[in-house]
Amino acid sequence: MSETWPKVKLDKLLTPVQNLVSINDGSLYKQVTVRMHNRGLILRQVCFGKEIKTKKQYQIQAGQFLYSRIDARNGAMGLVPPELEGAIVSNDFPVFDINCHIIDPQFFNYYISTETFIS
Image (cartoon, rainbow, N blue to C red):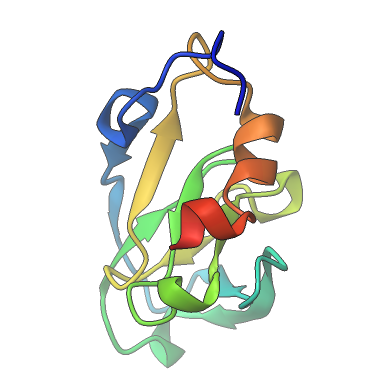
């Protein structure tokens, strides 16, 4: 890493977001899968709220960062793509806004795939 780039703690780059929503049985919701080995986030399914067990979920926005508490050590993390705007995740997937004044989100997305970051 270049010596001209300052080291910055993650808590300066990322701000936790908890956009909690109540699940309505009759509404449709997009659910997300976080693929391991830094392969990003994809749509798992679209389903009615009555099919979702946990009735409080977090709504995510494009450009946010999230990771899987269970599989983060295997690179299960990434940025929310535009097509998953408004999808929901459980509290097993912490969600963060990226401070774009300090780091470019696309560079951050690259950096989280490096062995340095994962270790």
